[in-house]
Amino acid sequence: MNYSLVISPDLKIDAEEFSSIWNQDPATRSIAQAESDALRPEKCIGLDPELINQGIIYLAGMASTIALDVVKDLIKNQIEKILSRRSSPDITPSFEIIVDKPVIVVRTATKQL
Image (tube, rainbow, N blue to C red):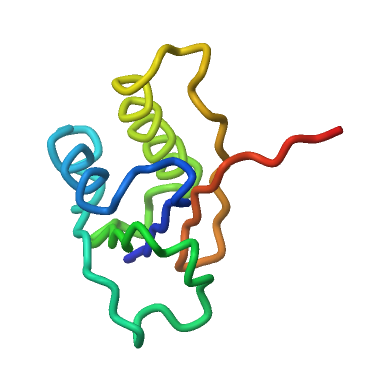
């Protein structure tokens, strides 16, 4: 199974950066290969243009037996790794991962009042 992953521009992680980090880690690379893609309008139908500003990441070759929760945890860990390299842990933005098969969206978490 293949998934398309989009990361909110608020997190300032582009597709190339995420793909590189994902593919360098043997644990995530063994699950799927991440490929970043230049934005092509035909691949972006139905997605918020602002959301895909940073590019789209394709997680290709994922076995159908891999639980989606495992994939979400791996994505979360890789994003946390990228964010922690940039700032101190107390100011790392919170984010959420939303799945709408075959698209996975990472966006900054909305604050609840």
